[in-house]
Image (cartoon, rainbow over the protein chains, first blue to last red):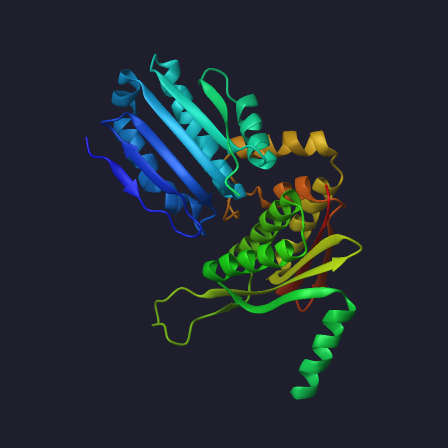
Length: 130
Length: 188
């Protein structure tokens, strides 16, 4: 299983999908011009590898400081996919990290949590960097 | 031309507009616009929360121009197959402690009624209704003619301090000019 690494740009996050450490990390801003196209490699990777990783126990760390509305849709699709995997008996935990004073990211996290039923989803405060 | 620019500058000042761009809008330009505004607001000691709101609204409005503007240019240096760039206008004003973001672009006249209906529907919703509508649309597949997730306007409506204002100016049977104005009050 190959890892997937996509570098950060001014408007897209850094993504690291590592089958060895069993951690998926997405960090930064997300407002690509074409969101579907940007996240396509990530979703393709997940389709191939998610069930194997879920059995071993996968951690998903999300540390987004800003995302646009179409990225919010992509995240919902992502959580739906993870939840389906959990419903099939896999072990996945999502950590939604937000800077303490970024109430907007916290609220988005809370709203995702409301729409999630079985996927373990933690809201994790971080010290503000500014 | 010299006189016209001076008049334009005076008009902008009169309306409290401190930022204005009219022309082809690329993704890279959106990044610059966002950063420029953040810096300007930082100088004015704007709160972090209103900076975030203004930033996120301007990105949604600007990306709507990229997605839906009917006016396009092709970069002169690019080849025949190069993608075209959408043209639109974005202004930001500050008045009475509020930031006012106005954007405009050409749209197909045949889309006017549908867009009007969508905005009116959103304008008629309260905070909780908007939240539920946002969430239900996020779960659905976007409309066929939607190029993002179809969530932009709902997301904007959830962030503004006053109801959205909009206008359609009919140009001819095929194109109309669409303008939308959003207001973020400082200190919210």
